Length: 344
Image 1 (cartoon, helix red, strand yellow):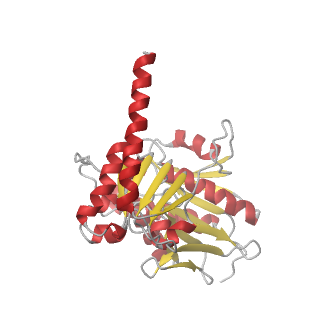
Image 2 (image 1 turned 90 degrees about the vertical axis):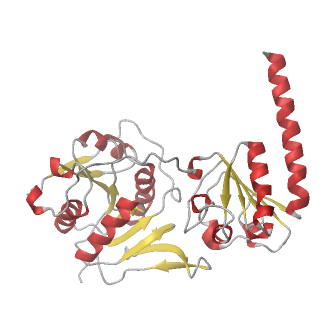
Image 3 (image 1 turned 45 degrees about the horizontal axis):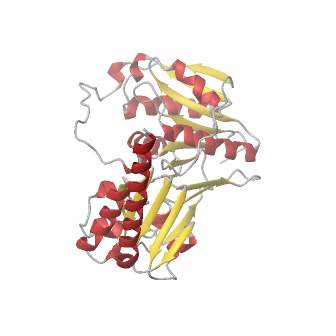
């Protein structure tokens, strides 16, 4: 295949309830770095209905171009309609790289598009780079159960495609007033051409654990020995008003539910403070929390890999040190409350 006609980095921009999810803005930041390294343009592709107003933040977060499909048939996401639009646009303008968020929508659409083009697709990427001269996308992700990092290449096909997990990339600072080229496209597509119909959208009413939104997370691993030992994590989290996280081993052991799992097969988090207790530090866990503001590790094994990824490390038995920390935190919080009462 001759690649000389393939140019530019694209980001598929999701739209949810009239807003752009943070993962799409994060990908614009990552795409900007790739595009600059290649000396090419960054474009967002936005598909929906009554979404033209969302092109403004796409430019302000780093895009040079926006390809817009704004038609009633795209009011609700359906694989077939969105795939047809993206395929048409890709075949017309030939991007070198297309990035998608590793969301339910992004993964569904990316896999459908990759199959039809056809090209390769790297799923759940956590690191991105590009070879400056060749344009070869270096998409890295944990493999073999999180024991190694694998960099996956697509040497024979274009465009190169990857889905990227939320929270592993950083959005650029918004630049108000920044603009670019808006390219409005239309596609000849009718409801009779689409095999699926949206009859009703039911909003989920059950309360979901959202540790990815927490400012402080206390996470525990198999080093705590048992479900009873894991209660130590809950006690410290309660003291700090923090969310509870866990390693994959803990979830698989049944000590806590899957929504609390941090890592490649769980949730990616970026709290201000992440406290890892009894977590050895497997790669698949590290990629889920490495962008935290401050990482504090407590482990009695001085050789534990977690100490290579933390800002502060405590080599100690968690059952000895954590109760002391809880006591000290409670005392400090009580002093703060008393001080506040006096000021009032």
